[in-house]
Image (cartoon, rainbow, N blue to C red; front, side, top):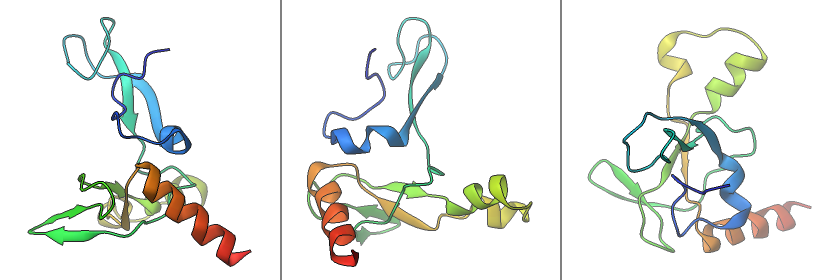
Length: 113
């Protein structure tokens, strides 16, 4: 299966945070049938990683790429109950999918155990 839509710097541990979906024919981030991977901001395993901010954007200190948003309330809405629109779509954190950021998350998990 093609990895269309997943950035080249993405660590294999982070590929699960992208969902295969229809994006539309003719898009450069989709295959010839219009399908590609898209960021799943409400994946239940997402955790914030270190970041720094320039203007309104967050960046990864390891790879310097723009970080991906986490919308944890979308998970809560699906599992528990309906919240107001603004709470559902609120960005609750940011994460990066690079190898060093995934390594940092693994180190954090090992520290907690």
